[in-house]
Length: 139
Image (tube, rainbow, N blue to C red; front, side, top):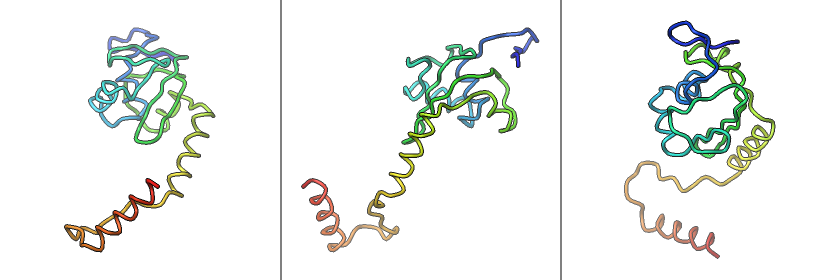
């Protein structure tokens, strides 16, 4: 599916920030730009700037929270469409899917962190429990 720019000419390159937004990795282009600036987006294993152009066949790594999506650019678009159309713009690697599934399982099995139910400052007993937990993790 060829990409057309705003003047209607056929184009084979799109800015990475526009592509990430069109592929629905980010809700806004400014969020995509922030992620690119903070090094969470790699194109062909290199840090890039928001104006970097991508083309079909490029590898894009997107880190969101603890998860990393490694996708192959299949098609280009600078227009945001329905999620079903956005999913056709890329193909996630099987290795990326496997790693995310394993990490998801590990996070699900990990004990939840100490959470105080919005009751303000921890009590003396709570503080001692926290210290006991910290000591157990260090030792």
